[in-house]
Image 1 (tube, rainbow, N blue to C red):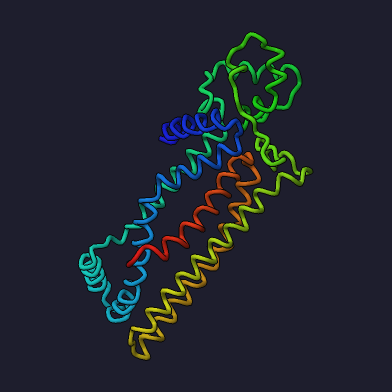
Image 2: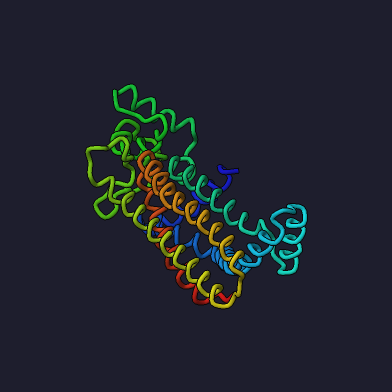
Length: 291
């Protein structure tokens, strides 16, 4: 499945790359295009988040009221979701789509000759073997990236090979080599620029999301009357959720750093641009999309 989408994305990215002549700029435009295609889903997700936030207080009241009767609680919660025409699993679709995008684009960036340039695997293996025979270092995980990096050398070795001469992957972008993998270039400080910017954008995105959630909570607190016992119960639940969110706010950047260090910078650039666009999208949709 991931290869199927990687083929589609590779065709689109290659088309953009042939038009603009720069891999980094092509990734930026590709990311913008994907965001536009996904906009209807993002709007639906924003509506779901706002609607879900409104339901949380009612759910907490039910949880307190029926805390000793789990079966009754489940029935009441299902009735509430049904009444509000909302599914408790409504957020799953967006998560699944994001996961498919993540893996498929990782495949595409990892194997640019396969998914972008449509070069036969047997031919790629020939290039890799030639590089190994001449003592050049070839990464097992990113052999196609190494082929792109050694393109001029391979053109001398295979002067009649049309596949090599049609490859149009200029991976130099704003002074950065997007073919580099931080783990393999630890002494080159430039490989940390995009991953660090990505982590910063991740923190900003989380802060904005938290701020929106707190704003929504404050509005509900202003209109909902709740007894002292219910207030205590609610505060305990919110403290637990806050601790969970705090852990996630640290876990996500740590995971992001780990992945960014072992993947080509082209993938990190996609994540960075996607994060920046997502921050703008959330701020705009929060103002435009109504409950």
